[in-house]
Image 1 (cartoon, rainbow, N blue to C red):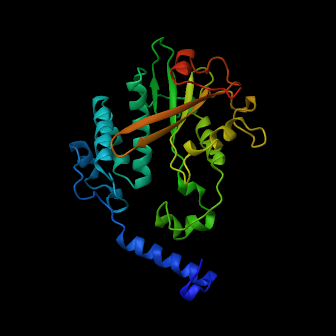
Image 2 (tube, rainbow, N blue to C red):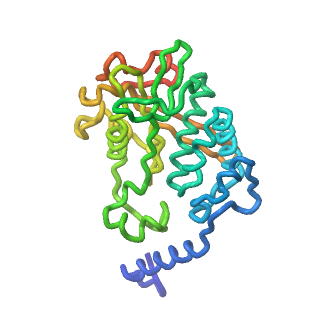
Image 3 (cartoon, one colour):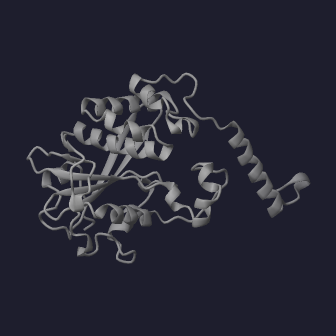
Length: 285
């Protein structure tokens, strides 16, 4: 890179330019609902008094606003809206996790796997998110985890200013290992899974680089070199892991999911065949 008069830019000059750009971005960064975006009644309800109202732009455009209202309407029909209001009015991280749970439930319901129980009790008295019912009646206990970019920060960054600066910074580069976040989610949720109930872990990530953009999701499960979660019987109480993403092309919003089976799972917890078939499951064989 060249500076004034074709002179190469020094490291200090480059660093100063990056910091100046970040400062300008921070100065113009806005929170709240952008002008022209209309909120539905349920979204307006969760926005009132929400901690996140000063943290980010949400919903950032009309397609997101319409999608969020549909998800909240689903929650209301299910009798769950009031149960989620507290989390939905929390900080941006809490809002993201709550919406992830509701979106996954909405996705399953739209694909003919309706929710038949909310907050089912799993192992050790710990609650999952919900239970879904395939057409055959073999219920599946579902736990949703939403690993975030904040978990990828160093210890120094977590206690310093970086955590408060948002997910994306101009010209920031970092070394990441998303497969570690996959295993973190599996380990964190595993204690909820009983040995006599079909069950599924759904990961809806908010990482620096989404799991949808690579094969790291499989490395976290099936790589022996990475001590993958599905390379031994150590996680035999878990039937499978799904990766869930939400997509937006500025005209419409839709959901995608990839399902991976645990070949070491106990027969009593294995994902039902019709469930595996419906979502094109893979066992990495």
